[in-house]
Structures are given as structure tokens and as C-alpha cells.
Length: 539
Image 1 (cartoon, one colour):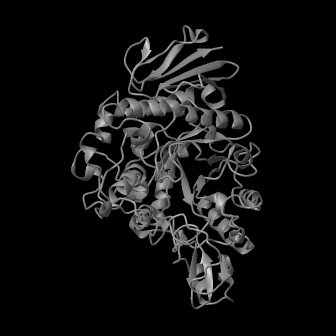
Image 2 (cartoon, helix red, strand yellow):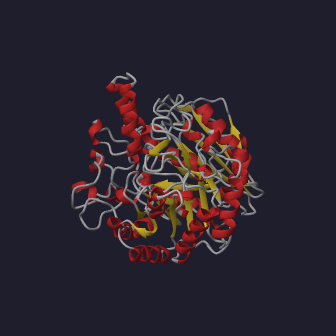
Image 3 (cartoon, one colour):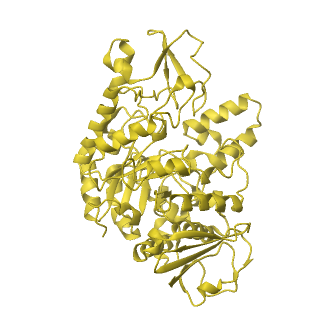
């Protein structure tokens, strides 16, 4: 078991993200909840994870599925109570699993008491907790657009002012230039640390130093000043793990975020690799060019080695299912899911599993009326207004909607996939009859056990943690091969990204090497469809 009192323990860890609304319902109301999570901790312990990243559980009107917080120190009642959270923290820790909370520090809900007070008067102290500009109706301060569509400015007639919101109008941005705002947030973080939370994922943290008058939302001039203060004032304990969601981060920026001295954060979530298969907007997908992915991975692996730390992920609550995106969710679903896992787990960084990824869960296809996600629905309406054909917009939804990741967890082949005895809050993917945890646990060759083996390998061999990366055959459009090496050990990871056999010759340096893991039975002179192998040798 990892010693989580020591700085850097997360470099040997694997985390599992839970989207509480869709994980496990315990009371039949159709919504996942904290007692439901507690009931599945043995499953996660069996998988071998060291921590749970818990998407927001704080009180919220759910305009953006909990990323609009109305009370940072309370639990949303359908999820449970503070006592349930205490029990989750306690029961998880008993199994060697840390709870990592998701904190939204860039904005609040418009139902937060601070914003309600801000609306009452310009003279209220809470008014300056948010970003306001004077103006007249119909003439916003500038033409900035919100991420979820429409203007980034919302007019309040009573105040004759606009407030700024990078996301939905019901998510007003906090004014981090106000020291009182920062003190409130630091006090809140200590509230959760005192309850036993062992880390935090920081939502869109690269946006807190916004300067909307200059149209700057990410990486504002005071960003690193704020993050260093946040780390110093709120993340004092050496074992706390902190990961910042930073869509704007490049390699150089990530070095500052995750410097080994711990002055800012433990690691970053960066998304360069996730944006490689889109033409401009994410709603315009193009086929992934493997050569581009390999170069992207090479740049991050070599750029952070020894000077920073990265998160490793292909799925999360905002992304479509990767087996449908970069793999094959039909004939080769199992093989391609395992291949993608092997490709990722051979790299340097801390892996994150998104719920159901270890089962090979896939995207869902629904009529537009079946979707819940605010971003998806706004995009659909806007594109229809711009003259797009409905069938083309729906194809983009099927490929890229965030709701693909938010279908209920598939536990069994029984009613509602074992998620709830009631009516699920969101559609269950019809393929739960074949793809579910019960079937995976009964099959020793399942994707679940492949992940379990990868996690165990990362803990057994130091080279997974500290080996230096080298890319092989960078121009090969079908096979991703790389080595990792430290003074004593060396790995070779080879992944066929296609549904066709590919030629392969084991490098001479790995003659006689041990095959640590492979997603096919028995040897083969060529790489079979979506085959992955990881070789190991001592140096």
C-alpha cells in the first residue's frame, strides 16, 4: 500500500473517476448517490485503484450537472449528506483508497448566497465577488462568447450592469482579483481536508485569472501568482494530491503547474491529444492521424520528464467513450479497449480510469430529445439556426456529446443494468446485456482484468514510474511503438491501431525479453488487429 503521507505518492498511483449521478443508485430514485458508491468500493478495491476522483457532490441546482455549486460545504441532498461523505471517506480509506474531490473555483451557481447578495446592491461586499461591467441592455461590454453558446455577458436591469460567465448564464464567474474571494475558497478547502479528503481536482483552474476586458479567459497574467498562493494557503499537507484541469496548457506551462518543488500543483490535465481528431470545433470530428498522436505524446513525455508530471487519460465525464472514438466498438471492442489501455499505461504519468472504461463501455445513440447536456442542446439549436441539416448535427452529437460518458454504469444484465430499481435519470445504453461488470468479473480474459493487471504491473516495476521515453518509427501510420528505460529496466510497448494485421519485428535489443502483457493468446509473427504487447527486460 502506498504511503500517502509522503509528497509524490501519486506518481505510483492509479485513480478512478466517478460521476456520482450515474454510478450507483441506492434508494430507487433513479439518481446515483454516495451510499451507492460505498456499496461498490469492494469492486474498486479489486480493480486495484488508489484513489477516487469524485465529480462534484456539493449542493447545486444542477444547471450543469453539479459544476454549478450553490453551497461548497453541503452535499446535494439527492446524493446524500455530510455524514454519508464522512462514511465514504472512512470506508474508502479502510481499503487504501483516497477520496479526491472535484472543486469548481472559477464560478458558482447563480443560487449561491454570494451571488444572491451580489444581485441586491452594488454596495454589498459580495458584489465584488463576481465580475461586473456597467452597460445598457442589448450592448454587452464586448463580443465574447460563452463556452456553452451565446454571449458571455448577462444583463441585470436592477443594477444596470452585466456579469461575466464563461459557461452558462447560471454560472457567474468569481472575481479572483478580490482577496476576500480567495480567502473564502481557501477556508472551504480546509473544511474538506479536515474531513479527510486527500486531494482535489480543480475544474478549469487555468481560467481563474481572467481579464475579460482584454478578452483573456485562460492563462491570465496573474494565474501562477494565484495558484502558488492557493497551494501555499490551502494545500499545506505534503500528501495532498492536486490536479488542475488546464485546456490551455502547453508543455512549458505544464512544467510550471507541476514543478517537482510542489509550489503549484501535483499534476495537470492537458488536452492536446484529445483535440487531434477535430477540425476546429469539437463537433466537427475527423479521423485520428496516429502520426500526430505519437508526436503529441512524444513531446509531452520528453518535455515533462524529470521536471513536471502529467495525468494520463483518454476518457472523462466531458469526453465521448474512447473505444467508440479511437477504437472499434463493434467486432474488436474488447481488443481495441485493451490496446488503448496498454498504450496509455506504458507512459509516464498518473493514469485515470473513467467509470465503465474498464468494461469497454461505448457511446450511445439517441434522438435529440433524449439528451440532457446543456452544451449539446445549445449546439444543436445554434447549428440548426445556422442552416445545418438536422441529421448532420445529430451525427456530431452521437460522436461527441458529453452525455456519451454519462449513461448509467452497467453493473449487470438485469433491469436498468443494475444501476437503479427506479427510473434512471438518463438512458441506459442498450448494450448493457452484453457489456456489464458482472459478466466482466466472471471472465478472466475481460477488459476489467486487463486493467487490473496493468495497474499491478505499474506498481511492480519502477520503470513505469521513472523510465525515459523514446518513440520508435514516428512515421508509421498504423503502429505506435515506444520504449521506456531507467538505469536498471527497460520496456517496449507496441500497439496496432488498426483492424488489420501489421508487420512487426522485435528490435534486437529486446531479444529474449519477457512479455509482461498482451491482449491476445499465444505468439504471432505479426501484430493482430488492435494487438498490444508490453515487453520487459533488465538492463
